[in-house]
Length: 209
Image 1 (cartoon, helix red, strand yellow):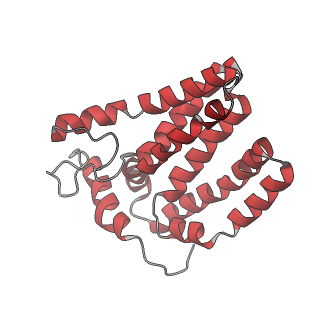
Image 2: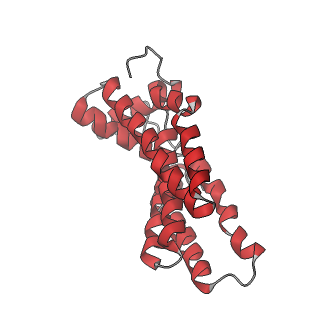
């Protein structure tokens, strides 16, 4: 927390100015005028919340990001157990707990920690109950949409969702339904931002440019 590591250039040059402009009512802009869509909107919104209630205290934001990074550990354990075995989950979680790049990205206040914990939570929800309970599939999809609104590369998960169906044509109907609801609502959650981008730029920008 107290190690004098510098903040990421993205956070300093984009996220903090956007957070200040959001608080000032100038919207998602870096300079107060020009519309912005270089990255997703979620992390600037979270940063604006912290700036509004705690000021520009880097220590508070680092504590939050490191907490999110720590919360990934139980999610990794759960995913390992659901996908393979308890032992695999424990080994993966042990590796994650001491994974230096992840800790470093959290310390420099990059947005990976937010996107990662949301992505893991979405997958854990889908695999644990999403194939049996439509509400869980929908909720997990909306959580994935938040991960996408934080880091657009979460969209790359899409093709892998349908591998169970492609590899097994006789996949249970509940699995197909869960995957459809999960995918549909993960896309539905980014539609408002996509409409905003089209209105601002006159071109199709689903999450980030």
